Image 1 (cartoon, rainbow, N blue to C red):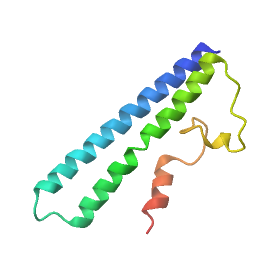
Image 2 (cartoon, rainbow, N blue to C red):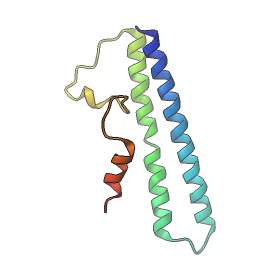
Image 3 (tube, helix red, strand yellow):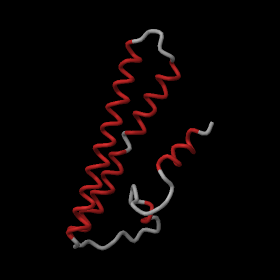
Image 4 (cartoon, one colour):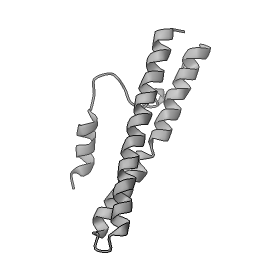
Amino acid sequence: MNTASALAEVEALRCMLNEACDALLGKIEIGLSLAADPSADIHTASDVFSDMLSLCSFQDLAGQRLTRLAALISDAPADTRPDAHLLNGPSDIAGLSQGAADALFDAR
């Protein structure tokens, strides 16, 4: 096992969890404000709560990263499933940026 790889994975996981929790807490604050405002737009409130649900996906991504980290530490064999390349969560390699992925969902 490469210690540098394991530490990099831990740091990436820590950053991802911090960002997800900060974003989720921000959306919750907005949701609470909307809930307290009787004139709040229902569509805006619905969008905020949908964003909250999406942000909760960090749990799945954290689980994937922790599984990969455990495999690094234990020198377990790599996952041989045909779709294993899809199970790595966020990637450090070049690809579609988060902004570009978000834009795909924003196009209505």
